[in-house]
Image (cartoon, rainbow over all chains, first blue to last red):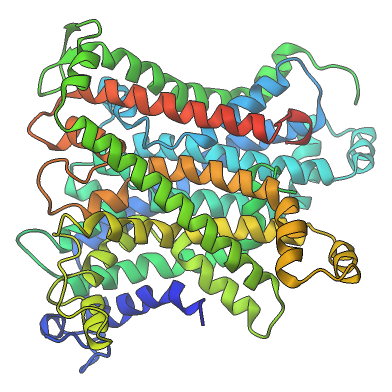
Length: 259
Length: 295
């Protein structure tokens, strides 16, 4: 099956993650472990580098997701429901931020955070991820808000709900699927972010997993099995989350221009 | 609901987004441009403006022509091969067969997984002594003896392109799949009644209707692949110099890794990179005729 090709490399990763170190040095290499050494996972979980990485990744991904949603919700609601001057300029700006990855701007981002004395802080990575993942959340939420019949909101307003009250008590509860999709996407994107973390986080205790994991294999140490065990732990949850939002991805990434 | 809101009210609702975008996307562009005409000490202290001399020095770098060619090869090959394979693959995903859900989950794995972890994995798979690839290929007699994929100047770019295609296929296939599913079934029926062969139907009916998706996938992939960092960064790790770098990894090495540690020079290249992406973005918006109304 062709589809098997997409997961075959990751099977190699999983099988190598449970091998004793010596078996990775076998020639010719064997795919199947001779001895299953599941302790590799325990060793990784007990390891300080991994724990620090996990903590950093979780804090950065969770807080930046919350921040991206907090900024995207009012903007998506306002642009979905109101006509105002500067509306298309604003949406254009959002689209451009989606096209720019932090990669191209990394030197500028480095200068900015250097001047603000935010090198080696979670704050810098939280802000970066929130800003660059904002666009996807705006598109997904905007499309969903626009599909909610106005009558419901008008009824709420008649009952004395203000705009904010209507949004919080009527619109958001109805928009749970879109909120979950936007949150999962922002979380995964922040979880996987590499280049800005590589640039700004030089303190080993604050490196997120994407950067920290590479310390298992350097010029001096070669713990491939541990690196793969750590990678499996980092990859499996996000693949499951990604599978949950799979059918909304194309719409959010192409801003509705495919159909 | 139709009355126009006041400007201050709009500013309140859009404020958080605007602050984030202006502070973390737009400001770095200015910081980048400013850095491109400045000089910094090796510890990052500003040492004054130097005009266009960083740009002049950029053009004088011996590695630059090689890096530009590498970038062209990297972008065109990854995007081209990805598009062709994805067109075929989307057709396959569109067909109904048992286990289709599972297949779709399989396909998203390289998309969801961290690129840096996937890149490290491929460093291992490509390994000269212990990598599974050499073992499989020598066993199947495709190659007579092991190849040092990432250490050999002749193979490293091809090896990187293969990984680039591998991680670009899921998104691209999904875009084409969305395009295919938007084509109404009666079009195919009409083609069948007219006696068109399967291939003829594909070329004359499916492809033209898929054109918008094709444009979107191509331009977005051009931007993504141009911007791609972890694959080249990781797979080209062992090779000294800039012989296999793209404009993105070259910029990064100038700024943070090589003996140069030259923020001003890197920023000059960064400005060029940003300008190239802007051209692609404008081209994209024109071809999809983006309007806020249907965004």
